[in-house]
Image (cartoon, rainbow, N blue to C red; front, top):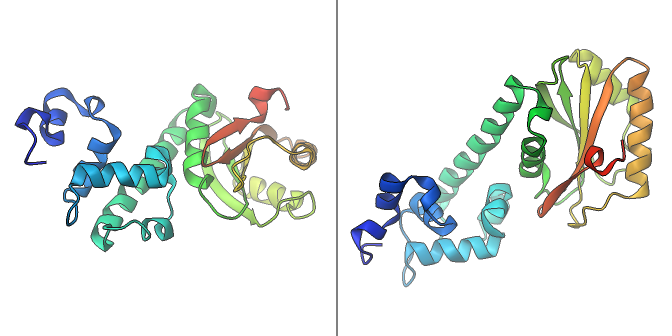
Amino acid sequence: MKDLPTAMRPREKLLSHGPAALADAELLALLLRTGMKGLGVLQMAEQMLQQLGGIAGLLQAPPSQLRQVKGLGPAKRAELLAVMEMARRGLSGSLSTEPVFTSPQRVKDYLQMRLGALPHEVFAVLFLDAQQRLIACEELFRGTLTQTSVYPREVVKRSLELNAAGVILSHNHPSGVLEPSRADELLTQTLKSSLQMVDIRVLDHVVVSRGGALSFAERGLM
């Protein structure tokens, strides 16, 4: 980056114009700081984003995937993982202080960041208090999800333990296909019925993948 005019260098641009003025590759280059032999840091950042699927892919990338990026040593991987975890905690913290439906997109962003890149299917639940603020987000089941592999009694039990007034269900589709299956719809109805018996509302079911998130509530499937 020393070859660039001072005003065009990412750090100087950020300090002069704010982070929104930087392209994705420039933001990543600031974190990487140095490139590798024969490849400048900006070029390395651009290649990383192409390999990982942009900023969204980077934020969801597991440690095993980062280890496959050429030129990304342990120190840089650790810094990136720390930044990614800070982003997750920031989203989680905001969901804990205000009603989740103040910003439905924030809920989808959080769930996509947490579950979207996982190579296996996971069923998670966001437990909410009476003001629809986040109490906890927990992964309850793993593997191929069906009505028989997700046990309603376990969801009910954990909801009561946390004194939850409502929940948002979520699971990921590692295939990348966001369209909910008939099994997803049946599972949602089964859990709604089970939780309704103990006066706990199911507010939504969010399906996520690396490429996006789909809300049952927004689709009119609730």
